[in-house]
Length: 51
Image (cartoon, rainbow, N blue to C red):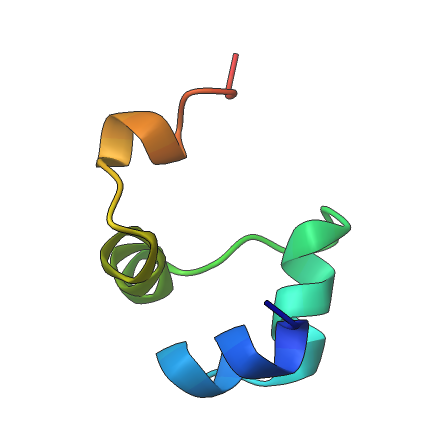
């Protein structure tokens, strides 16, 4: 999936997705919910790599 496709699906700009991937910014809570729903994962899975 491209950044542009994901951005359109969850209602953000492609640049926002790019910044999230490069750890420049983090998604706001509402977008985290959208990502969890889009990828059909749990919040625990989403945050699994955070120390």
